[in-house]
Length: 231
Ligand SMILES: Cc1cc2nc3c(=O)[nH]c(=O)nc-3n(C[C@H](O)[C@H](O)[C@H](O)COP(=O)(O)OP(=O)(O)OC[C@H]3O[C@@H](n4cnc5c(N)ncnc54)[C@H](O)[C@@H]3O)c2cc1C
Image (cartoon, rainbow, N blue to C red; front, side, top):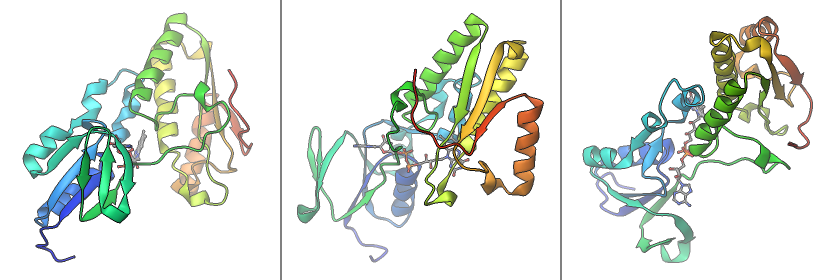
């Protein structure tokens, strides 16, 4: 594609991938339309502070309209229903748009483990961080409880695991409970099916994690396949 090509590029998805694509394409001078069913880009990495009330949910949202003002792209807030590639069309809930080139950046989702509906995920929809916060508030009010944090992975693609958010959330819970002098009233468990969760951080990282589990008396359920979640 030539740099000054004036063809219409449609980007589906207003997360990091979609927004970054829009910025790059606009810098190259293209006509770009961003379609997102959320009117904000959710800054997932800082959402780990929502459940422990160190940041407000609204502060994790980057309004797409603000980005539009700076980068001058077309913005459509609507849900994509289907893509008709033979006709270069995208069917949205409220309109149909045409494109010359299409970028699909819808993000990922988890395989539906049985019972997943009984869990909350900091990597899920943005509102999940609020649900975790409300549930954690309930436990704090009650003054005792059990919290299990963990992650899964694909045994066929061990390098594809991203456990960082789970570790960050786990240690945020631990430090909040300690600050509130409630830690001895809670049972904390960390679970993961692989033998060395966090291996991507390297040997030193693994040793530090192990020390932290022991120091905070975290129950470890490691190397055991997740079958289902029950409640
Ligand atoms: C707690 C946490 C910490 C993290 N820390 C880091 C880090 O330090 N470094 C790092 O590189 N990564 C980190 N990540 C991962 C990173 O946040 C994700 O990889 C990134 O957000 C994925 O961006 P995305 O644009 O692909 O998807 P998403 O952010 O999921 O965006 C998808 C977009 O598509 C839209 N969409 C979906 N379906 C439709 C539809 N049908 N119609 C219209 N729009 C639709 C959604 O509304 C959304 O705007 C972290 C993640 C979490 C949860």
